[in-house]
Amino acid sequence: MILLQLSSSQGPAECELAVAKALGQLVREAKAHDIALEVVEQLSGSHAGTYCSLLLALEGEQAEALAQRWSGTLKWVCQSPYRPRHERKNWFIGISLFSDLPAKQRQIKVDDLRFESCRASGPGGQHVNKTDSAVRATHLPSGISLKVQTHRSQQANKQLAVLLMEKKLFEQAAQSEEGNRAQRRMAHHSVERGNAQLVFYGMKFDSVKT
Image 1 (tube, helix red, strand yellow):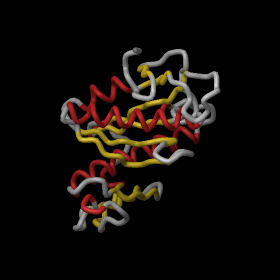
Image 2 (cartoon, helix red, strand yellow; image 1 turned 30 degrees about the vertical axis):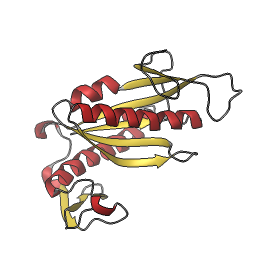
Image 3 (cartoon, helix red, strand yellow; image 1 turned 60 degrees about the vertical axis):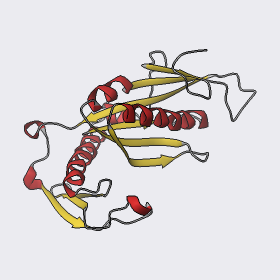
């Protein structure tokens, strides 16, 4: 399983729209390559249907390749739909991945995690678990706790919980070190605008300029 984070990097509304369009493209590519894609976390943007950031969980044989291809800076070349007279046409978002690690490479010890089964809550209709397959994970040394109800399988939710916990601990460690430029922390604050990994054009979000 892989986590892929899309961030408007504190950019304007156009960047938040670019995040939404990138999500749509990723969903299409994931479906074409038989990759399961779930939205784990989301922070809505200033306009309906846009996002400041998204955290996606990818799973499948080609998930790593897809995530690697998308990781980096994405440039969207388009006239602003919100500010028609605005001169700027280049909008940038940041995309970073956090891969599941083999057990021997993880910083989390199995004995440091406590799992509790619980019932899923919130909206979602038929997609919400009807059984106690949701999981609450607590990292005993730090006291960090999180609930995962993305999957219908409790085992899959446990796997995602471990990955999310490692991400949180990684970010916590990065923030405690002055001047640390860890990728997960910096993804929300900086984008290499001169070195785009992917480029898309127009409101149709085409990968080839027409």
